[in-house]
Amino acid sequence: VIRYGTSLDRMRSKARNIRFLDQAGVEIGSHTVRHSHTREWSREQWLHSFSDFQRILDLHGLPKPLGFRAPFLEWNEHLYPVMEQYQMTYDTSKTGGGRWPRRAPGTNIWVFGIPSVRIPHRERPALYFDLNMKTLLRRAAEAEGLSEEPDVRRYMNEQYFQAGMRLFNRSYRGNRVPVLISGHGNFRGPIIRIMRQVCNRPQVRCATFREAAEYMNQHPEMEGVRR
Ligand SMILES: [Zn+2]
Image (cartoon, rainbow, N blue to C red):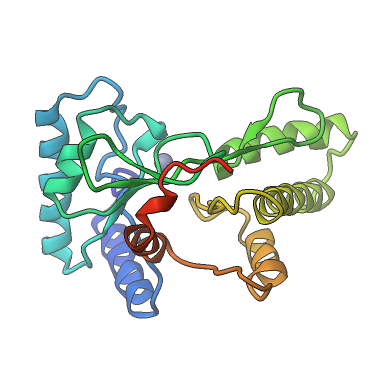
């Protein structure tokens, strides 16, 4: 997203960072160029957005992403045929992590649902999505009577970690649904902590979305499995 690039210099340095990360083996998806509200978009608007994205990639010599997340998670049914047209293989815009990924109807795009999880001081499960967790865990920290840094940050990181471990354990002891960890770069500390805890366990594989989509291509019988 370059809408937040406030100057040409900033955009250039962002492009440099992306090239660096790509060379280091980090997988980077598309989140559109402008981060607009897309809920009501027509197929033409999605097409325009994707061709615009491609234009920016070419301009800066950036790698072509295989995956997508809609801004504000505002996907609609016109998105997926356009993604397919751009040879993408996976989407992470939808909620619902209780079952194995499914293909977007009529396409080969694998949809990895964002799971929900229980957190303290909240009745309903919370979407395990970094910006959402940031807001809700800050509220939880307040409910705990915490107001000072670094106590608040420490509490939030710990709760994010615990929630991630609950998601992992639910899957590991149950239907082995792929556990999504994705966001805007928040909670890096607890994410690394989760990976250190789980990636070496038997029959666990920590993978990028691209690899997970390839796995799904090789195991189509797992599509949509609940248990
Ligand atoms: Zn966003």
